[in-house]
Length: 371
Image (cartoon, rainbow, N blue to C red; front, side):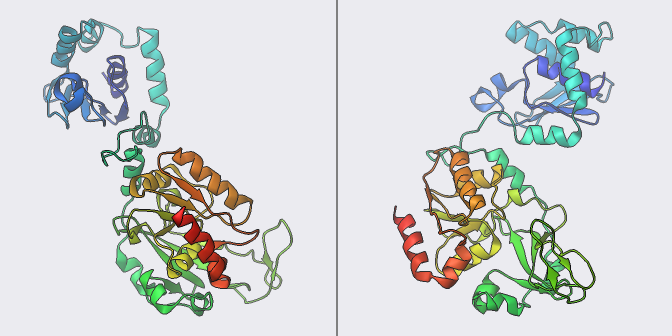
C-alpha cells in the first residue's frame, strides 16, 4: 500500500485537507468526533504512515494524541459509525484492489496530479473560514495569516553593512534623518538603490527592497531614452533601464504589509500602495499606515488587516490602478470591518500630497479618520 492509496482511503472515510508527503499522509483526524474539542479537527492533525515497525500502516494524531495500527482504526470506525470499512481492511490484507471503485480511482488520479507545493497550498489556503481567536471580533482566515508568519527570517547581518547610510535622494524627498532611522533605511551605492528593510508583524526581517534613485544610466551615466510604451534604454550604451524596485530573492510581496511591525494601536489603519507613501504619511503623523507594495492586495494582506485593526482607510493613488486598489480592498474585506476610501486628485499619490500640500492631506485624512 502506497501513500496515494492511504490518501484515497482517508478521503473516503471523511477526512479533509488530505495531502501526501513521501511515505506518509496528513489529514484531519478521523477520530475527531470522539476525541477532539467540539467534535472536529480544525487543522490536519492526523498523520498516517505507509509502514510501521511491523510493516502494517499506522496512524498518529498530534491533536488528540491517539495512535495505533490503521487496521484497529478501521474497525473502530466501522463499529461506531456503521459505515463498512471492509473494503479497506481487505486492501490491507492484500485481498482487494484499492482502485476497484470508480470514485476511489478518481481521487487517486487527482492526488497523483498534485505536486508537493500544490498540496501544501491546498492544505494551508483551503476549505472553510475559521472563527477568529478574537472572540467577539470579525472572523478572518487565520490560515492565510499563518502562511505569512511562516516566511523564513533573514539574518540581520546580511543587511547590516547597508544600514544607517542614507543617500541624499531620501533627504531630497523630504524625509528627515529621524524618519530614515525609524524605518532603518539603508543605501547600496554600487547598485544606486535606497534600501527598505521589510519586517513582519513580529518584527522579523524577512526581505529587503531596493529602489533605484538615478534617472540616468546606472552603468555609464548616459541619458535614458524613454519612448512611449517601450522600456527605457541608454542613449550611449543601449542598456535597458533596470527595474525601479528589486526585492530579496523569493520574496512574495502579497504576504506582507509594509509597516505592519510599527503598529500603533488597532483603532484604524491607513492602507496605501508603495514604500514612499507609507513613510511620508507616517512622518506627517497619519499613523498607523501600511503599504501593499503594489495596487493588487493579496489574501494574507487582507486577512492581516481584518485580524489586526477595527477600521481600514484606503488611500490609493489618483489613477486607475489606485481606484481599483480601493475597490478591491473593500471587496475582499466584505463588510467584516468598516472600510473608508479617500479619493485623491488625478495623478496625485499620498507621498506627493503629504510633501507638497500638507493642508489638503490633513483635511482628507483627518476627515476619513473621523468618519
